[in-house]
Image (cartoon, rainbow over all chains, first blue to last red; front, side, top):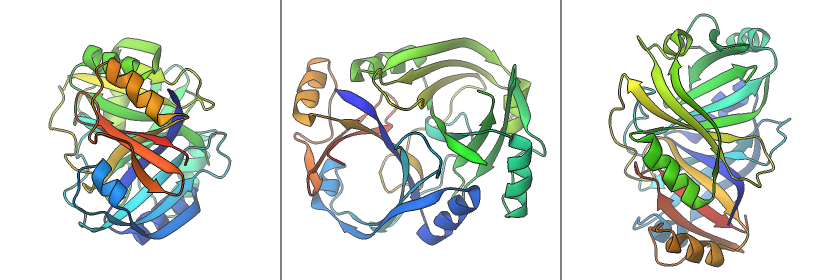
Length: 146
Length: 146
C-alpha cells in the first residue's frame, strides 16, 4: 500500500527560469535528468509520446525525502496556464514551513521574490503566512507556526 | 529561510467525496477544520473572502509530516476543472511511493480505484508506476522503486 509521499510535479514552460526561481527561494537542485524519453511515461499518462527535461529540487534542510519534480515538456510542449485563483479545482498550492517569516520575506525580497501581500497575514493562533507565485503562476505559500 | 515542505493543497468540489477517495487510497484524515473563515487567507491570496471546509490527510506510515490540505471552498465556491493533461503548465501531479505496486494496484481495484493504464508502466531501471485520478481529475501517481 501507499507508504509515503514521494514528489509533487510542476510542469513549467522554461526549466532554467523555474530552477532560478526555486533556487532563489532557497531550494537546491538534487538531480537533473536532461533528456527523458520514456514510452512508459507516455503510456502511463495516455500520451502518445513523452520527451521531457527534468530537475528535482528540495529544501536543503528538509527532514523528508520529498522533492519537486520540475518538468519542462519538450514533446508535446507545455499547454495552458496555471490556475489563476486559489478556489480553482485541482492541485493548487504548495506550502513550505519557515521558522522566521519576517526574516525570510526580507531575505527573499532582496533576491527579487515578490509576494501577493505586503506583509505576512495571520491565519489563526500563531500562524502567519505569505504567498508568492513561481514563474508560471503556481501558488507557493510560506507558513510560520503551523 | 525555508525549512521544509509543509503541505500540498487540493481544491475539491465535494470534500466528503474526495475524503472517501483518498481514504480508499489508504490515506487517513489527521485533522478536520469544518468552517474556516479567515480574512487573513483572503488577504494573503487577494480574495475578497475565504470561507472553506478543510481536511488534512496523510499516509499513516509516512516518515514526513507532510499532509494534503484538502479544501472545499464555500464562499467563493470552486471554479474550473483540474488540468486535463500532464503537460499542462502548473502544479500537476502528486506522487506516492509504494513497496509492492502489483499488490497495491490489486488491492485498490478491489476498493473501486481505476487507473489510466491496465498495468504499471516501466519508467526506468527498476521503476514502475501507475496513475489514477481523484474525483476532480487530479493526477495521483503510485511509484515503486524510485
